[in-house]
Image 1: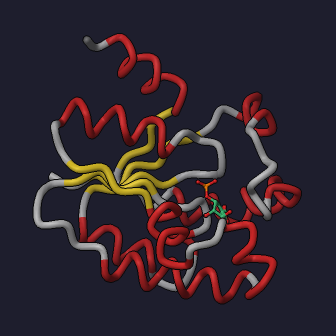
Image 2: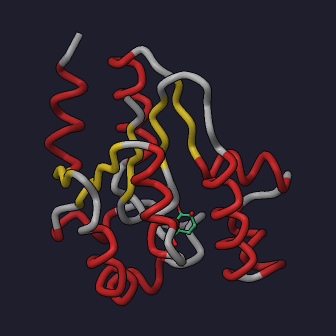
Length: 151
Ligand code: S3P
């Protein structure tokens, strides 16, 4: 089974994704990392040099072309599911899980490398209908605690 993690910046997609992949003994893939490897510069710089639309097209290209041969856990960028029909593509590739951040934790995330974080509340309002299309919604802090307790 493939798992695709979606959710807002700071919801722990990468941290939880790695823990899940370890538990399930499968491959872990992070689209932000793939993009930085492909472009050889940090995401913040991609936004700065080429703009958001370029980044979204790159994300979509990575999504469409990431097809590991074995089961995988995929952590995605916070805006990826909400661009064009990316969420439908994700649902064809695996089970989509929305890691929801409890409101009280929303602004506590480390934001210095996240170019869009200053618009967090507006973005979350725009994205919540898209995130709701996931197959499952899980509160991120609960699953993190559970996964950390499994030996
Ligand atoms: C973004 C989230 C970031 C990264 C980029 C844009 C977004 O990933 O893809 O800065 O639009 O929400 P994380 O969700 O891993 O922070």
